[in-house]
Length: 414
Ligand code: SF4
Image (cartoon, rainbow, N blue to C red; front, side, top):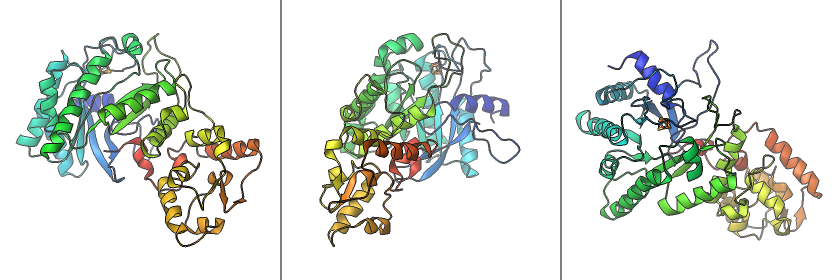
């Protein structure tokens, strides 16, 4: 069985990877129960909003690479450990049997070389499935640069794989993660996507939960527009399930990195914009230009609406679905409620209250058969919207406050 000391090192080192869940909490245990800053078991979310627990661990944090932003980098003086495939399997099985976890998120530093590390990971997942009979969820972090055959074989045994893009451009990778290239990361993503596409016709079970990736935001100078354009391209080209954004936190003393954290608000805004691209029919170009950052003051849908006074107010009794979902504060579920209720008569503001459709934001952008109840002056609307957003303390879902979508899904879904 794996030693407690080794386990501590390997779960602590894994906690900065957000490609399966949220991270970044610094809240510590001051005498009560629980500790949000510890690694170990993380939560992730299925597409239907169900929360599941995963054992989140590295195979090893002993790395031959030297990425400037990473605690496990070669040049960092840090306790190192390596687990054997059997240790990971036994730990997963024991935790699973005790009902601590429903799955495994297994990642690794690059130990010796990419092929050697990928072989270790592959051996672990094959053993888990075949020898230990584990049928729970497995998310495996792939090793860029490893042999394609190893990566494809792993896809037959795990539910999800992720290759982290880490930084948005080749230039930043060269500077901060010199042993990685965009090609070495995108090539396996492309292979897996191709195989999954071919596999769909055979109805077998290759990588059933698809692929995700992660980008660190704020460690390099790229703007949100550039990051979101890349995100949009990744969704289109490789049908990724999610792109995760990890706001940069200085954990090393590299002179190449900013000395201040990028902040959770930036990460939060990117998730909001990402959601609009995936579910609300927005293109990146509508929300932001390549060299801009998202507004700090307003969520991206409000910021877009304020830039387009010519499109508002929208009459809720006549607007098509595509326009209803573009109204700040109106989510997809509420828009469908409106369309369905309109069949029985003209809607009034009291109907919205009865249907529990939030009006705090929307009120400034809608009319009810020509009647307007919002602020008339532009600066009054902006002030009202700003106060709404600031009062939320960057809760992950201010854009979708009418609860039509499980809040947790923003920070991780399976
Ligand atoms: S490859 Fe880079 S990011 Fe990954 S563990 Fe090694 S130093 Fe850290």
